[in-house]
Image (cartoon, rainbow, N blue to C red; front, top):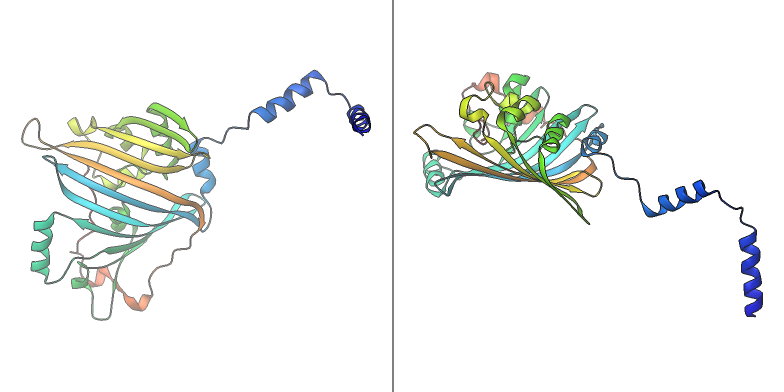
Length: 295
């Protein structure tokens, strides 16, 4: 029986056409090494498309004298179009410290809860405690129209917007540490606020002008985690903001953002018109969602 098996193996081997040395080398190389994934910037651009997106969640804290004086929690969804971010729908809460929150609750006569913000390119909608004072009876949403009105509203606690290819590329070019693992790649580095301002359109929208003096030289330290396909799954940033009052006066801001569900189907819609009040008709002096101090 073994002789028949051996004979069959010889016949099968002889029926295979011989490969050249070059073909053999190419075949073995293909088996040994898989093609590397596209760069993180290319992978980001590949996500841009109608009604696709992901989920985000972040926690930002501002420290002064070693104690957290502001904490912002936020989570929600991001929708892309062919150019990048089309809309965001987030729910967040800002904690200004136990004593301050209690004082505000006493002044307003109500408990402070979470705020929901839905943003599109030329409109934004806000709902939650703090906006109810400006809303007519029966309305639960405050609507803002015009890009100039929503620049601060659209800002997330994270100072670095990785949804901007140029901004993500700037982080990659300022990486000092790079480590690979089974789950992906870890990168660490720092970029000055001036450099980040030049690269990031959304940061330029958040600031009244380019950072100057000591603020321009502030390093924004970052830790960036990529998955095995080179999509961003986590970003942590840290920076010190000098304060007036002499040397040693500063705040330290730390923000940790998670990105999950890349490629999910996302279609954001504005709230019903019957539930929305136009901010231009109810008065313009209303509070904006809290953002971390920059510049």
